[in-house]
Amino acid sequence: MSHFIVVGAGQAGQSIVTTLRGQGFDGKITLIGDEPVPPYQRPPLSKAYLLGDMDLDRLYLRPLSYYADETIDLRMGASVTALDPAAKTITVDGEHLSYDKLALATGSAPRVLPASIGGTLQGVYTMRTLADADAIEPEFKEGASVLIVGGGYIGLEAAAVAAKKGLKVTLVEMSDRILQRVASKETSDYFRALHQSHGVDLREGVGLETLVGDTRVNAAKLTDGTTLDVDFVIVGVGITPNTQLAELAGLVLDNGIMTDRHSCTSNPDIFAAGDCASFPHMGHQMRLESVGNAIDQGAVVAKNMLGQAVDYTPKPWFWSDQFDVKLQIAGLSTGHDQVVIRETETTRSHWYYKEGALIAIDAMNDPRGYMVAKRLIEAGKSADPALVADPATDLKALMRS
Image (cartoon, rainbow, N blue to C red; front, side, top):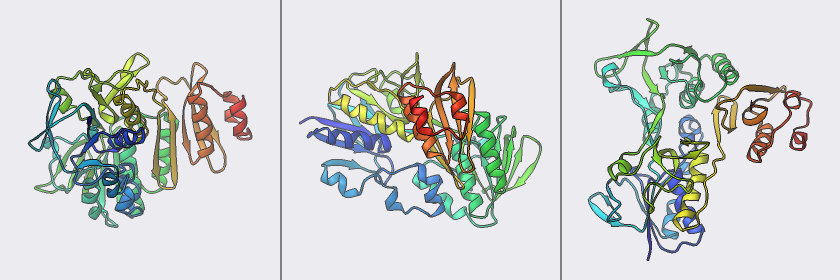
């Protein structure tokens, strides 16, 4: 009987094992996760879960009974310490397991502040895992002062939750603007105004110099010379792919674990998916840090473990919830040379063009605009910018233009 092992029990790992069974694979499946809980959704951690609007059971991607019903050996809180591609074995908590095909869905880890500037003080948190969210939650007391370092989506989502819970929120972003790496100036302007309207003290072009405290943080010195009294700190300065196991095994790395168009690594029996994996796209190796990528690439990995030789074609989509705004993103705006704004009384969206072709959209409370643009982008079609900018234009007409 064939044995397929998946290392990493996040969204990508779950997608792999679910697809394997869905495709009729009746061999042995082992799913290994280093957290002591079943696979769960990460995006709600910094949103609904932290707000108390989502219970723990609703976070789980599948009930625990699913794994028994589907004869999936789920190993929680397990540590994989070695991978031997020649012998086709992995070492899990001292036990050697043999595999026929292996998938690495090891995800990513949040960047942390160095100890030299107070990163190891008590009261300094990252927001990546369920344990992180559970550790932070008691700090969210009305009137408390929180410093958020980083103006990406995680930082902004945490800021929104803190402000809604009545905390005094200061967010610093050392770049010229929030969301600089992932969105246009127009989108940055929109979310800056949104946060400021809810009382967030948002400081751009300002970094953290050092945190102050004996054992627990109580103040922060910023690069503009100011000092803030703080009760706790949330760090959201990006993530790095977990490639250590692949590196130890001698797999080729390139912006993560390098894979080919079939999501296969440099070893023909080892595949990779999710945050840890890079794949060929437009002449270079790309990584996508999103749920959509984890799900879609995980499904392709499962099919290719079964020998189907399916190409992975990314269809990027993302979302973020901040205050009463749902941001939905489709496509990749990198390299855009035109941004078209479509706005009504209740919606706003930014449509990105490159050399006249529609390549991405940021939609704020505009689900219809998002769906139309997403379909156009995935079909390789565009939409007349003048029609997009006119709020009187019927969105359905854009599909026919």
